[in-house]
Length: 200
Image (cartoon, rainbow, N blue to C red; front, side, top):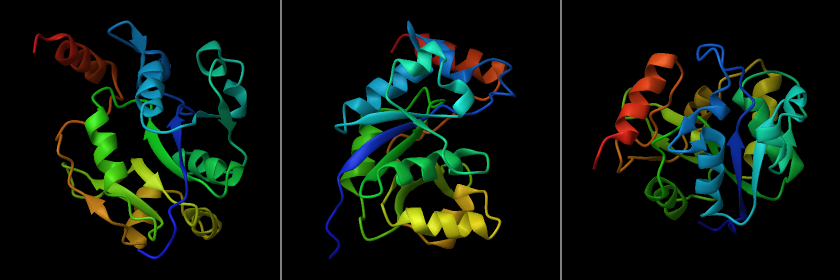
């Protein structure tokens, strides 16, 4: 890999509408902490600076406003907007991007991702244990992904997973099979609570 590795910042995606959950997913509580707090604290243990990705309408939300924010600065919707906005805010930086709704995400999973980073690619991602496709919302996005994502979106692309497939990014096999399980519905939240509260 001849490319010099850029510094890495962290981005916690917390700009979603949480429509399936019927309440703000970032505020869901696990073991005394909100999902957003848990994700922010986790990423903070691995990189020097961490930001929370939000829509403009969320900047005054108390749970988000206590953290450094990157407000969506490009048009469109979905997580691709948050990722592009971070790359635009700090274009010389790589971003360790994680969704806030990953209650089983671990230090080991983030360490594995950072350890196997390929700075010559647009991103390094995990392969889903469910469908074998790239997981864009626990991935390391390199600076060169910025222009490539802009072109992709200008051509009508919206799905960051399809973008990663198109660019044939390096995919890692997660050592923890459940680290990337997300929580989208009240039923999944109840199951996650039961799992995390169960004795080891």
